[in-house]
Amino acid sequence: KPFKRLLLTGAAGGLGKILRERIQPWADVVRLSDIGDMGVAREGEEVVQCDLADKAAVFKLLEGVDAVLHFGGISTENTFENIMAANIAGTYNLYEAAHKHGVKRVVFASSNHTIGYYKTTDYIDADSPMRPDSLYGVSKCFGESLSRYYYDRTGIETVCLRIGSSFPEPVNPRMLVTWFSYDDLVESLRCALFTPRVGHTILFGASANPGSWWDNSKAAHLGFNPKDSSAQFAANFPETGAYPPKDDVATIYQGGGFLMSGPQYKD
Ligand code: NAI
Ligand code: 15L
Image 1 (cartoon, rainbow, N blue to C red):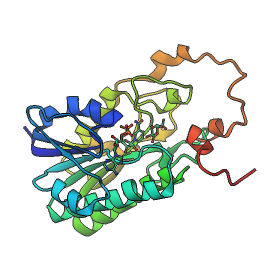
Image 2 (cartoon, helix red, strand yellow):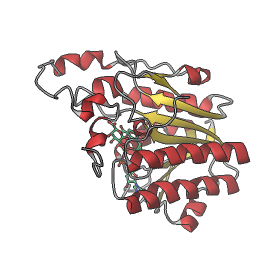
Image 3 (tube, rainbow, N blue to C red):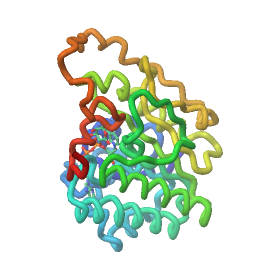
Image 4 (cartoon, rainbow, N blue to C red):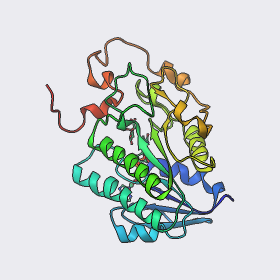
């Protein structure tokens, strides 16, 4: 197998549970970690329960690891204190430990909420300035900048995967644009882990959906070609013209409902 030991953080989460079933072929041992319960280790697994905010625990977590899929952390809007511990300190602890243990490659589960303040009429690429739509989005911008710094300073390579909406199927009209099927997610991780040189790459994680907002040409060297499309679900969301209203911020901006989370500073 390509890796001796592959670390997956966030293993008890929605995506972590899916990935646990799918990444076994890539490593002799998959080390699963989360603050939550992951059940018992199966064959070819190690289970390490730890808080990403605990620097000493994260240092131990990275020992003997070849590569990391960093999916752990707070995954929606929350208090600054919680986001700071899990996503900001947690991601720092992970990179610092990765560097000290000589880990060569990380895939960072970033988010479309790094760019949620672009409009749904905009078409952007990896060089478009970040426009986070929430404190959660800001923490993902931090992770992207931190991984850029560690690449320039230490040579650890990272693919920042700006995941759209990775769920079994779209559950609202916005997700017809942002949907990322589980098969396409796994394929993007395969490309991110096994492309020989990735440096520091930003990849938008979406299936080949009609009306996409995101241009992945700057990540062409990864050779990622999504196979699925939300088109098969379009009939689930017939256009009524009544809802959502056309001036709804969740419709105007790419970040959708995240624009409605947290304090509303404008009228
Ligand atoms: P999730 O919330 O189901 O899973 C996140 C996991 O991280 C949870 O099991 C949680 O216990 C763990 N976690 C939280 N704080 C922690 C801490 N302090 N220490 C250790 N573990 C901690 O989220 P989901 O949907 O599985 O997402 C996984 C990753 O992908 C997250 O980083 C999320 O931000 C990112 N993402 C997911 C998207 C999606 O569509 N599912 C979209 C964009 C980004
Ligand atoms: C995210 O970043 C969240 O982790 C996920 O739960 C979804 O809300 C997703 O974005 C989305 O934008 O649909």
